[in-house]
View (cartoon, helix red, strand yellow):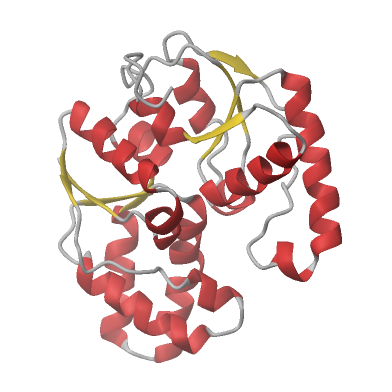
Length: 247
């Protein structure tokens, strides 16, 4: 299958290893990866902070860039949620019938990574090996918008050598929430402190998630507290074959 990668601006700027891991993983599984250089942002940051008119051109660019994609892999549940929840609204508000059809046509071809692997490709064992104790943080968008459920956990449980540790209160937000962490700093810090306590109870070496924004927030708190716990996107663990890559 030809799979197009939308790496997301967040990953491209701050966590490029995630995009590279997606490519390694999917190529190892026998797929051809396409990376359109014209891609930019999905528009979520603008839309969520009130600049909804400014998000519309970004949506249009995304539609043009990925128009002929067979399947689109996006290693970020928050970006996929933006597209599924808000692209139809933007298109409807435009009154442009062609734009509405374009959104309706493209959305079924958009997948978060764990969705792509389990639902589209029918895989849970992707041939990964990662001999470490790992816990999984379920981000708010992955739970409440995409309803991923246990898809990431099912993938992790098939990784050779991986010891999975369930995270208490997995349904609780880590406190990041994009600009929420800036506008409501004290509340965000309190939520982060609870999440850090939950992580500590697992004795995990690594925390994983499908959103690097959450992982960055959790890492910041743990790092400042002197914890050696590392953060790795799900893609990086699934791309590992136990040869030292990503360890």
